[in-house]
Image 1: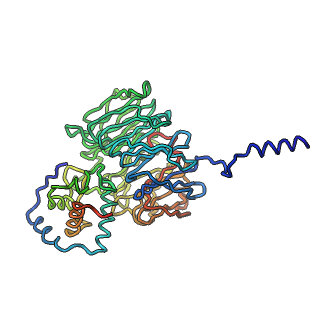
Image 2: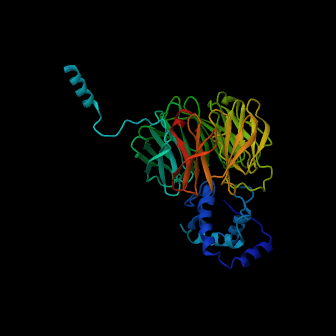
Length: 106
Length: 388
């Protein structure tokens, strides 16, 4: 699935700057559970895809991180992907995407 | 005297060699432990765990159907695994990897054919229930959703998106030749059908649409009349409104002429008169409903919810059309299953690592069983119903 989202420049700037601080270890534990369980409904517990596209490191290889972060926070119009901004901070989304791209923890 | 001794000898002789008591399967069930790829076999009369069955692969979003004798379960795993389980022994009798990524399946009216819907590669495969031998295969070029069994060994299913980005409904008829399904295609039924149901009598196949409003309805008595659109206002009222979990349609609750269906992205249960396919009301609830299931007598509906309201379950009185109780079983109630006549309901509480059993009359908890991140709960009486 192609991800084509035009983002306001300000938002890109925000997520890039705020994300410099990693979430706390406790938050990372929550986020790991969150991705495996909630994202797993559509993307699979093992992130190999389902109704949603696969989120494994090879599947995300070469995809722009900022675009993926924006998709995580704001959804992808025209698809079933919702925006998770009410529950995730920019730093959370930044951590999730980088973790997915490098192989997500169990 | 002699006769008594002879009788005693006969009775002794006819006892089975093992100490295992004879057991029936009508009050058994399986609970999916999604993270560990295992199943818990349970007895619903005594609210007891019999055993854990392991080695089922990826069970995220797993579902299953039962053989008509209620002895075997056919489990559909996300990784394309199809496993046949003997409820009497808890053993995996047979297991085949039939695709790369599957979403669910169904069993034929006569109980001899299993159909599996696949995402990757998109299509449907049919297997013999005795041997799990492949009977036939239908490539679709699209993710397949909402596969349902109907009368006359027919299966209906939907295509999420064809090459033109449109949804389709297909019917496969295996009544004449199990190895050569007769396929009827209904193109352009609406955008992104995401799940479907068949009415309890096997007649109405209904697909929910994610990409636009409305539903697509096919009369299995008269497929020649084609797919009709209904409920023009049903669906996402606002496309920007997030839907955190797709509602399930497989168990749309039907009570008399009324169907009670989850509002998509809305905090409501929608009431539909199926004699006219018109929306006749809504019931406000505590979140985005995932499952709306009717107690077998049709007097109550039990509703669970999508993230972030999934710690709650609400009970609706059908006559009053309102919520009569809100339960707080805890985070992530993923599924609910009634006992055959509905005096109890079982809830899976994922993050609590337990299954809770409620008395539906008092709505009080009467048992709690430990389970590892449980999701789907499936009881054997499903064997005798269409579309489960």
